[in-house]
Length: 335
Ligand code: SD4
Image (cartoon, rainbow, N blue to C red):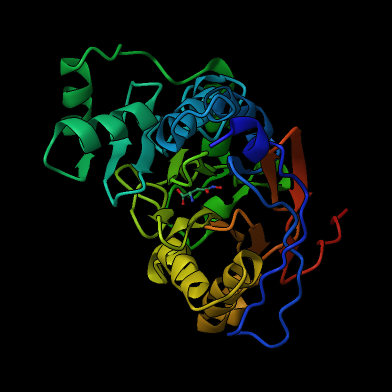
């Protein structure tokens, strides 16, 4: 297959209909392969790194690992890898998972001292008979396999944590982790999915999780089916936001199954958000959860509970940030 031909596909309108949803609108924006999409604006830089592999006809699995390593290594990104915000005890603990086109997957949770949690997840997938390894066991496995032990707590994250300690009740109040001091939303996991020139899909998801979480808390990001799911026949999805909510509905798997039923990526994400909202509409008003999906035709889409979720798409010659549609409009800033 000619790489140039396939890489040249860009900005096609979604032409497939969505039989399961009559009011379906054709808003999916980009179509083609290879393609890589990732959560939030910082996904743009991660997409570029992934593209160094995808653009040369490389494998989606290598691309997603390479891509998410960018924010993992960035000390200024306080929600992923090095420089991630710590738990309430001041410990930076990372959650990550990776999945390929063949249902192979690997995951780590509560991993400390290793910058590239995603590569340890890949190690679990490729070098062990297991899917998920947590805490000290994950660290031990990493060290045995040549990963370097590092201090992940940057001065900035430490200072902010100490500030948080002054005001926090130091008790697990439901969703208190959702908002950081100063009213900033605490949401920035990177989830990335890609399809290579062979049409194979893979995904990766990595985060330091909710800031100031209880030590040992695990979110959706390392849980296959919740934070990430890839089905090479149908598509792939990933999530960001309050992990507990995503786990309850096994969100990414749900999005993929909705795409299997014929929903476009955006409407599959929307349906999953509605499922979550319907469970507890009152709580959902103050939560953020966003889903991002790519189908086998190279169409992508996203949807979030709250305004503000963005995602980055690299396909052809363009690397573009899109604003996801949301159930709730932008919140007015309180004075
Ligand atoms: C978690 N989903 O640990 C992650 C956090 C997150 O945007 O996405 N923040 O629940």
